[in-house]
Length: 112
Image (cartoon, rainbow, N blue to C red; front, top):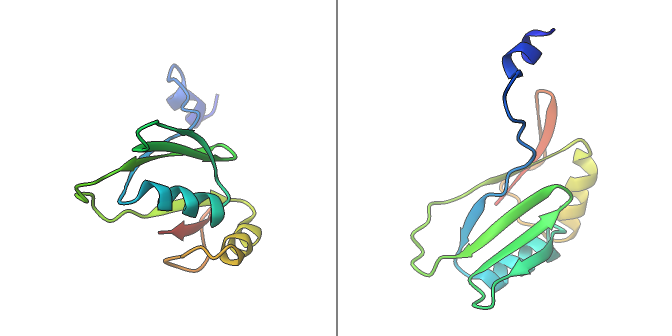
């Protein structure tokens, strides 16, 4: 048994993460994630103050924050098809806080 297998024995495996992201305008945020980043809306509350967008195995929960009390937020999207994703989101008009960059063992595009 490997060291990693011994360390992880008996622990529940996490399958995905779905962060709640405060937004100042839910409709604009949904439009951005759908139009610029290729997500699709899978749920929106009747009050239009909460929505879930998904792409592949990624889910983001968007929460209307009328108080605008949230801190700045960065989202890092990881992929093995870095150049393809970078070209896709730039072509869609996404605002990127950095260009594409690689980290050890994986690739990412930080988006704001």
